[in-house]
Image: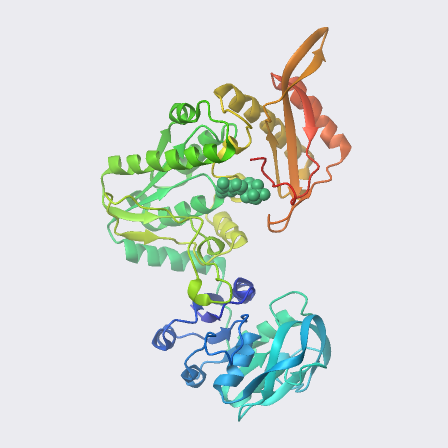
Length: 510
Ligand code: XMP
């Protein structure tokens, strides 16, 4: 498989660079700049991209690399900090510019025959974000592009296949950035573009087979997209050597536990263990109202049950997780050294010995994971499932959690999802669900006064869940949802719609 290395100098768009490369059907691997040059040599990359980063190359504490990388004979594309670093390593000089450039800047190509600028007009807009700039060119390099404030906005040493751009071709604001990346991959690195999701699956399955051999693997299956797709890949690789442990704490959506069980037992060759522990969770949560306390209890109890089940399995093997790229690598502020593991980081109990940890999706982004899932034949409901918090409905029931409240919420949420699916509006929403605030209000049903639960609907649109807007669902749809919930769900006499953005609110209520 052709591979391109994205050498990480702590820039904020590094994942995006890898993503763009993969969109051009070339596999991209991100490694921190601390990786030894021998590893790079051995891995046989078709090309190397130096990422941006917030440092100044003339700061001795800034991330540097062995200049011998420029003599490996592997094509290089330096981006932003990576551009300045290329100049610096090759013997040029870098200075702090009199004028910083941020945002959309007019760029003009100076070498129209440059392979990097094939199909790029002489004038276009690029995205800049820099204070330093190249002052003098290194020997053997020529200027291939400039902007008003940056006389060396692009440079190249065509003979050695070394290219560098001060701007960010990976962001969409650079009008022809994607074309430039494609040019680098196909015209400079001479890639064939053999990376497709199918080859990812074949390759990963082969590697998993080799690594696991005749040993066992245990995977914690949550029913979410990532662990489901990891389970699908592992099952294809080692079949019954895989045991998936699904802890059902009773806080999933209506019928979801049964759906997960049915899907995995009917679709895949594996051992599937469902641990039903609703009672256990309800008793651990009895009387608890504080949101943080509830989250903590749900998290702690989950792992207690999970590890106990693994002890029961009593088989030494590998421990697999559905960690995906954004979960596992996060560049520290400007220091690729600080790349850290978070999110899916699980503290392993000392008394359970594993042969190692397997994370088959750790190079992929969410939508790539979904594409793998589809190709593995995992049902759409699972592959396109909207995000669901680890603590489940526990964070959507305000106040004490009881079985009665869980059922009311599950039923209301089911109606909401059913109605949204029927009218097709779900495709416009990033996430939508019901919340049970634990508030009773007065109502009237028939001739009777009622005093029953209020349910809230939360629906948001967002790109990244860091900020979110409340969804402008048409009134007629909201009206149908409200009528159906109050008619079909016992103990609800009022429906309200949450019209708060994030910030100041969060998506979830707790
Ligand atoms: P907030 O409420 O922080 O939610 O605006 C942003 C996104 O994260 C999801 N979320 C969680 N996901 N464990 C998870 O796996 C959690 O504890 C958790 N809390 C919130 C939330 O559903 C939304 O998609």
